[in-house]
Amino acid sequence: MRLLAIESSCDETSAAVVQDGTTLLSNIIASQEAAHAPFGGVVPEIASRKHLEVITPVIEQALAKASLSLDAVEGIAVTQGPGLAGSLLVGISAAKAIAYARGLPLVGIHHIEGHLFAVFLEKRVEFPFIALVVSGGHTHLYLVDGFGRYRVLGQTRDDAAGEAFDKVAKILGLPYPGGAVIDRLASKGDHTAVALPRPLLRDGSCNFSFSGLKTAVLQFVRKNPVPLEGGALHDLCASFQAAVVDVLVEKAKSALLETGITRLVVAGGVACNSAVRAGMSKLCGEIGVELSIPSPILCTDNAAMIAVPAEFYLKEGIRDGTEMDAKTVWPLDTVSERMKV
Ligand code: KG4
Ligand code: ZN
Image (cartoon, rainbow, N blue to C red):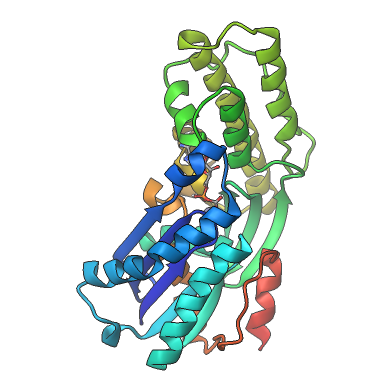
């Protein structure tokens, strides 16, 4: 099927055209980063207003880039949740309007399902696989048995990995969102320079905790009140990043060894991180696991990833009506309920 997909769950307005859940024809992403940067985080009210401003041109650009008109579209996919209510509603309203006006099938997709399958736009991964989703809102390990068949193996007890990157960047006076900035500065630093904790590293579970690590960075900065710049800043960024990577790698390893599964997918914005990619690659090389990480542009929020599970659901005859509503909170393991319909 040729699907038009829409994603607006947080601060990126995106529309994409994807053929058969595998071939990316266009993937337009309008970022609101500049609008939120002065506030050091996403302001929900601003986010929904910005989505409203650009949703129609973003959809038009996605069709133009794919050299298609709406006549050629066979179905509509949209992120239904989780996310910011006002932001989600902009994408959902646009999707419903097009589906209704054109008589096209519509399906609402879980945002994390999109992240899980983004890599399918570049390569097919066999089931089952272990997925580590590391983003601004999620740090979860899942066992993925198929589309719609997910089991949570572990998750963060407090901050998500991306949230920790963004909060540490704020402590260091770096711009929002801080993940990519820390990644860049860390590449020039010594990751052994500052001793930082690795929370829950060897507790035997697949759970994570990053708030203590963030506090340790804060305490270090308070004890070293000299403006942090140059080498000292690079060293602290590298040390923080290494602590996050050590934990992510160790927990992914536990999940793989515990289940005996030999395929790992790493997804979400933090999967762009160069040290995360290198650490996972080393781990998988050592234990003989096939590693799949999407290209950075498909790791962060985008609409193309939403089309991948949508293709599966629409083919199964699973679809939503115009009564579909935003789900701000939506545990991924409850998605399977729709398979029984
Ligand atoms: O998946 P995503 O685009 O949005 C959510 O669903 O949350 O992830 C955004 C998160 C932000 O916290 C951002 O700082 C982080 O991904 N991020 C990175 C990098 N690029 C983006 N974190 C570490 N290193 C990066 N290179
Ligand atoms: Zn996301």
